Amino acid sequence: MTSRERLMATLEGRPVDRPAVSFYEIGGLKMDPSDPDPFNIYRDPSWKPLLSLAEERTDRIRMRSPVRAQSHQVWDSQQTVSQGPRSEFFRTEQYLDQGCRMVRTTLRIAGRTMTSLTRRDRDIDTVWTVEHLLKSCEDVEVYLQLPDDVFAETIDVSPLIEEEERLGEHGIVMVDTEDPLCAAATLFSMGDFTILAMTEHNLFHRLLEKHARVIHHRTEQVARQFPGRLWRIYGPEFATEPYLPPHLFDEYVIRYTGPMVEAIRRTGGFARIHIHGRIRNVLDSVVRMGADAIDPIEPPPQGDVDLAFVREKHGKDLVLFGNLEIADVENAEPGPFEKIVRRTLADGTQGDGRGFVLMPSACPYGRTISTRTLRNYETMVRCVEDL
Image (cartoon, rainbow, N blue to C red):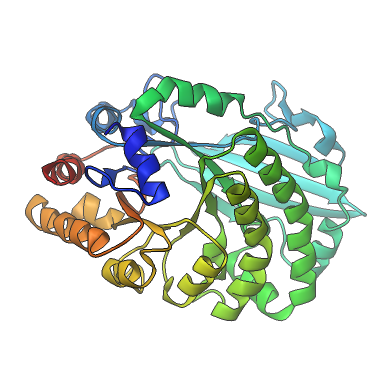
């Protein structure tokens, strides 16, 4: 089978010649070693063999957004946002501080000023939020006064179609999108979010509804223009333990993410729900919502459920993506890691089930790839090919 045939058969619950294997972000996200940006960690030579391995020997799942990059913003020469419909309320400044790339966003509305600040270190491909935009119920009330057209975005599926044509039989394109919960929760620190979500239900629902109007419209539009494809929806993990109790998963995820799943499936697509951490007490809700797949099913102690349990209980309902922990990929010795991989393959394919894709929970985000890490990625491919 070609990679495309294998992946589509997996999603549709049909037999495959072997389990698919994906390196998740590696081979999924755009990682360009030729980009001269000094913050581009993939320029380091140690990444080259790993990127080549993903391109040449994995079942590629390209993760792409249908939202045109910065469709509502224009950067001027001083690296500030100076045009676009958001400019009446938002101003964003980018600058360097002690070698770190900082981005400060200022929101001015109704006589109130709110700010957020993010930091990106040169050798780590992660953005940390140093200061969150919303810090109180009063901030939320003011934020809700923003006109909906401030959040207008340009939908463009042509790059997804072009990427699919480039891939040919070597893989598939997966639409990558946040849900309303993610859009709302990331406006706060985790502490402020959990308190608000548990104590101010009506206010938090109003915030979710505001973001849902944009995200649901986007989902409907893209599902019609790019039907029958795999989607990844991230954000539901904000409503899992230990952050929120399981009954709020139904209130904040099924109510707002559920319509996205319905729109995707209505046009023949497949909805994959991304949830890190503890998922045991929300698995029934994920299935009830109509999801087709789940990732990354982290093993204990990062998660709270074994892959074999999920396969036995929900394997007929869900395609399972996982469940190799990235800490093992980077730190385990090759011998013990191979045992982990083979056990994962056995657990993910045991008995009757819809399908399984071997995949790590994340990818390295440092500038250098160690020899051990590369060998462990090679082991993943070799163990799958052995089948």
